[in-house]
Amino acid sequence: MTAELTTDVARRERSLRQLELAVTRKLDGLLHGDYQGVVPGAGTDAGGGRLYGAGDDVRRIDWNLTARSNETYVRETVAERELETWIVVDGTASLDYGTGDYEKRELALAITAAFGFLTARSGNRMGAVVFDGARTEVIPPRPGRDAVLSLLHRLERRPPAASGPGSLADALRRVNHLARRRGLVVVVSDLLDTSDWARELRGLSARHDLVVAHVSDPREDDIPPVGLLAVVDPETGDLHEVQTASRKFRARYAAAAEERRQSVTKGVRSAGAGYLQLSTDRDWMVDVVQFVVRKRRRR
Image (cartoon, rainbow, N blue to C red):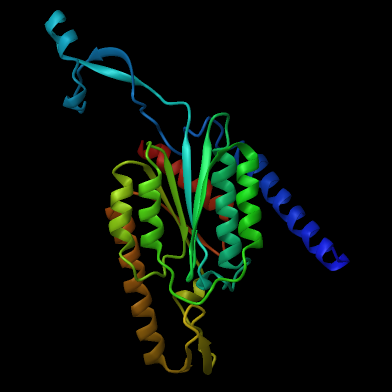
C-alpha cells in the first residue's frame, strides 16, 4: 500500500469517526429513547385488554372479553423491541453537486449515518439498497454499529456513479420485496428521478414506517444572472449552453423548479411518509431534530 493510499484511507476513517461522534453526541442526547422518537411500533404480540374508546380500530375488538363483561373491549398489543431498518440510498451522478457547505452526496452520507447510528440498538438490524445509473446493490440486514460503519465505508469507497438516470422506483420495489416484517424504511435521495417512485412509496407505507430524506441544493431552484453558462447533465453527459442574463429564461426556470418541487411534495405526502427536507446550505443536524420534534407533536 502506497503512502498516498494509506493517507487517503486514514482520512476516510477519521471522517467517518467524526461523523459517528457528531451523531451519537449531538443527536442521540436530544433524541434519546430506543428509536421511539423516530418510529412508533404498535407490535403484534397480544397484551391486555381495555374498554373501547372513540377512535379505536374496530378490528381490535376482543369479542370473547366483550361477551363475558357485557362491555366492549379492545385487545392491546405489546410493542416490538426489535427494529429492522432499510435505507435506500441514491448513488446517481446528480448527487455529485453542491454549492453550499456540502455536496449532496456528503449530505446523503451524513443522513444515512444519522438514521443508522440512532437505530443501532441491541437486536436491531439495518440493511440497505444503493442504486445508480448502472446497478442496484442490496446489502442484507445486519445488527449493531459494525453494520452501520460497514455501509458508510462502502458508500465512501463507492466508485463514481455510472452514467444513466438510475431508478428509485426499482430500488423501492426491491425493499418492498425484501422487508417482510414491519420496520423502518428511510429513502435518501435528491428525487430527481423520472420513474414512478411515488407509487412505490405508497406501497411501502402500507407496511412500514416511512421517512423520505430529500437532499437538495439551492441552485437547483434558482439560477443567478451570470451570463452565458455551459451546464452538463451529470447523468446523461448532455451539454447545454444557457443565457442566464435573460429574465424570461430565469422566470421559466423558476416556474419549472416550483412545479417540480410541488410534484415531489405531493408524491411524498400522498404516500403518508415523513418528509425530511435537507439542503447543502443548512445545518443538517438542526433539520433532523426539527423533523423528529414535528413527528412527536403530531403523534
